[in-house]
Image (cartoon, rainbow, N blue to C red; front, top):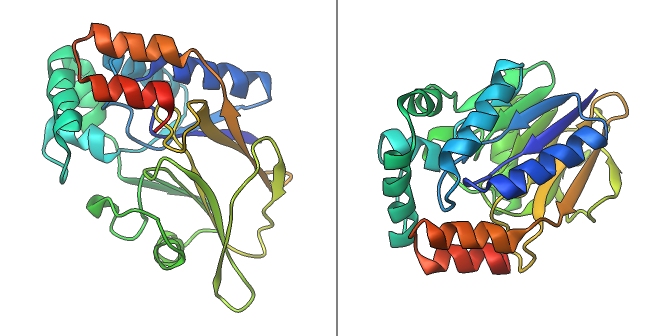
Length: 246
């Protein structure tokens, strides 16, 4: 079974639609959305509507810190991020707000753990930005495979035979063997707002049968996404970051 892993969509419908089409065309039969459906972007209602339809069809959806901020403050946010959250509260209908508020912080099933930030105290929204942080999340997940977002980057961490942590920067489009004889943590990147200077949408797909994960970068009309942000009257910085991938 192939599972599409999408995180940090950030109300970017163009990027989401492009990744979903790519996943479908490449054999995905299940979908997992790893949080931050909203924030930064302007397509808040449309994105939540799409993801809620996938959830109704059996997709896994977990809560991100921007999703939580719709209902209550979820830690520090800079001025433009808070502006986008305040705007999103006005744009989302009641059903969408109930959907976001009801999302779990973490989902564990069989060998898999899905969480936005760290599986160790997911409510703290800690970043997996080091081998130590990855190790803590892997241990807390208590599963072979942990899938996360939050850092807007793609990285693969793994436990070695000495219970130490290795880190691997994936090459987009290249399948990576991830055998179940060790434990893994994959940061799948950001669909809607990558921050490595490349505006192409980022996501990953996990093949449970072959025990392989493939990370992708998918070009989309990021100029249109930036224009939507400007037309919504949101901060120019938010539009600029989508356009430049920073």
